Length: 274
Image 1 (cartoon, rainbow, N blue to C red):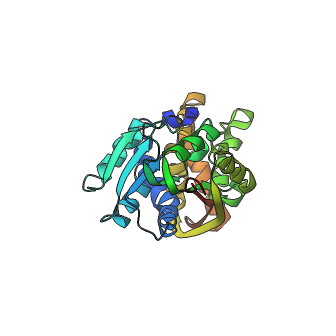
Image 2: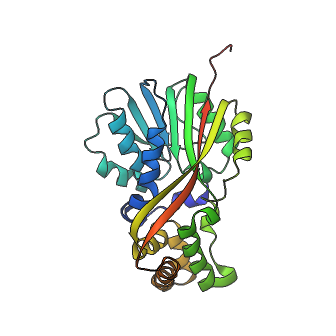
């Protein structure tokens, strides 16, 4: 896994879930669940489940039909997920490395991953592992963020950080927004053996989000927080104020519409012999 995934510590998981979750991750989780195959499945693996934002929707959607194993590399994120999944009887949380999945071949009919594949250090190896644990005729469904240019609120916060630190600014956002070339992703999946690969752009707008929530969420709810503190312990609050002002100026008020853009992919493991 890339180094950022091991830095979701302290208050970061809570801030990620409470601040970024409602306007950034939850809407795309709902969109992803709505695009899942209509045919019934009984076994689901979720990778990079984080604080369980997608997991809760999967649990409800498949409440009477499927068992879900939700995994993440970060114990801290899983602890946050556990709090919201206490009453989910069809979910088991487990620490796992996507590069070496602790599951037998052909174990799951569906593998899902929301905004996680970008953080895998060896994406070809992870895709091969996903293919291995999928049952024949199984599906791998996931999303990635589009470019920062296509996610203007994120870009404004990143601009505030760059403006504050200049050449020394952390480059955290380049990782989640750096996997936005559909052709490259299709080649990655094909190289792992997947077929019947489809993709589409998914854009979602959430109205009336507090600029302060956006700024504080991106600064304190991602591993970048630790990098900012290391560079300048006083910088997080200053950058939050700068970013909040940038958002208010750009959108003309303290509550703004947030449009986010992602790429949605579906890939298939063919039946053996076909």
